Length: 227
Image (cartoon, rainbow, N blue to C red):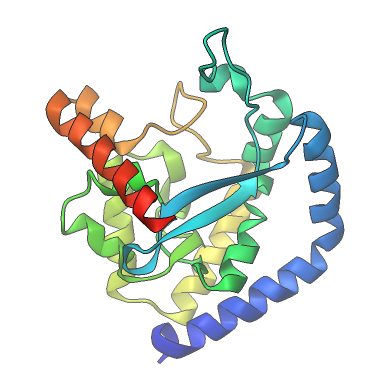
């Protein structure tokens, strides 16, 4: 009953209440972000949601759009400025996702929405994580977030969807708040951002370059078809 009916109602009410309560902070971060990022303070990106339906996830922008002389984006560690690092370390960049929850794209708690180019490299079993709404936070986030391996991260997602309960979600919410205050597990060791699943599989020799390139093409096709 909870996972099928009540969870969505509670998600909507919690998101609406949070947006109203945090509206002053949202306004300040929007204005400061517009200055720090020299323009649009928001970042949108296609992510696979419930039943792999692709939606546009919205966050506060943490990286600039700086490019080299050839017009290519500079490396992440160059574009991730001090303000962006602050947003990520405090998880404030995630606040606009409250609107995704309000709309129904996401839930408060659930498997974290990954990139489309991550999904195409998952096995059929791993892609079962998309049989529920993706969450603002989830079991993987409170069990190590980006500091755990991809296999462990997806394993936590699959463990979560086996039994979704109200008390389980409350426990994850409370643990998430503790993690945020401690700024724990934000990035992988030695990395400014998390490694894509395809890059990880290629680097570890678990897929070939041909499989990697094929996956990238499939991801672009799925996004083009969605929008």
